Image 1 (cartoon, rainbow, N blue to C red):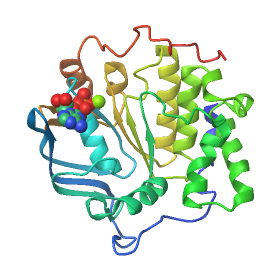
Image 2 (image 1 turned 120 degrees about the horizontal axis):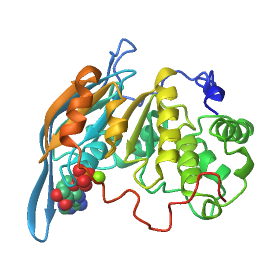
Image 3 (image 1 turned 180 degrees about the vertical axis):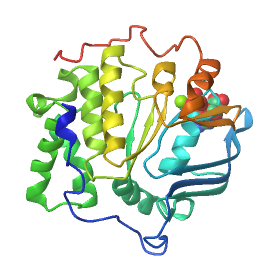
Length: 287
Ligand code: ADP
Ligand code: MG
């Protein structure tokens, strides 16, 4: 499967996309993600809760960064700031030259569709569309490829992740692992430079998790930048950097040499989201 990844990138020849008024020059830097003094306060009926307390984070192009920390420490909130799924209360988020915190809702959706592939723990494929239609969706939304090429590209991506055989099935009739691979193919549809994954293997068995992790590694080798929230100490050990969050603050950011030790100390010994039957833990090959 992984060998099929070689050379799949850049087929649209579009280079990088930019929205008016929010772009740096092409010299834009190896700092593909910059989070500057980001504070996020949720306002609820029980009062205010500050989930991020002045986060600074710089990610270089081509890094594979694991974000770890105890449940509730702010990992998803941070990922949501970077993907533009949610907005900071204050501070700045720059992604590949775009000031994400300044974009309107409409601009964010278009921008995200082109610049970021987002992968969730529970896949979030649209249930009434086939696997292939799900993969075509970002191309349809962003008009990144001419219509006749979209189907071909979707099939190419599905073939790359080993799902050509189930392209015309509905998500509900393929396994959890296959749904996540389809979600990764969808995330790659517009050939974005960055993938952001929030516990992407949190709901999968360990063999499937390993396949997905190897796929991510291959994508990093091909030039993608990946941010991955994970509870898995084995996976956190094998990335280029581990960022540790506690109570809304980054308490450590270690490159690979030190990451094994950091992962060991900071990851919970048991992740409640993994391995506990919930009906979605199906074998990868099953359908
Ligand atoms: P993690 O992903 O590390 O488990 P989250 O980023 O989801 O943590 O949440 C961080 C904190 O912010 C938690 O205490 C959570 O309860 C709180 N939180 C998250 N989303 C909201 C929200 N929409 N409203 C209020 N509080 C929230
Ligand atoms: Mg979370």
